[in-house]
Length: 228
Image (cartoon, rainbow, N blue to C red; front, side, top):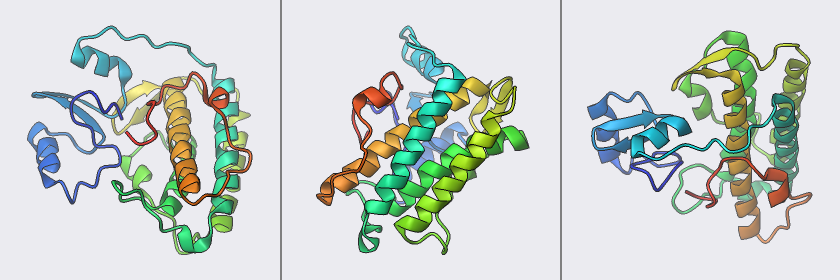
């Protein structure tokens, strides 16, 4: 999602840009997102490796404790519930002009990527396919997606109650990393997509109820742009 570095694939419709698939195949990159500079690349979101790729010093900035990340993520999920309930059923198929994901899919994706943290901890792996899942036939209106979100929040809260819920390493489709880093990535990833859901509400001239502010999201390492 660092659009100023190399080539990025977050949210890109690769069917319309097949040459980008060729970049992935040429370098043996299994999936997007990826950042490519010449014949060197970083697969997935890894800011330290991205900094090394472009030859700059990496400043991690503020490091959040897992408990604060858990609280922030829950606020983001609650905000996504409120937002998706506001979207009229007939508008849930709306898409950004340069993206192929509908607002229904986006609201669901926020909950699914959050649940993926627990799934990864339970199953010992994080396949990239989890992030490509779409809402099933039982999740076709805002209320149903919001109820799904409530179940995700409950499952996460139960996981946070475990003494070592954010300790050790996790094995993901983009490499092995400390669980704390995955939790931070999960939180900012959800926050960035929530900003995009708000964009849709703004386009519909629907004021977002209980809209999270910049202060609520301060310190999370997502791009300044809503669509990057």
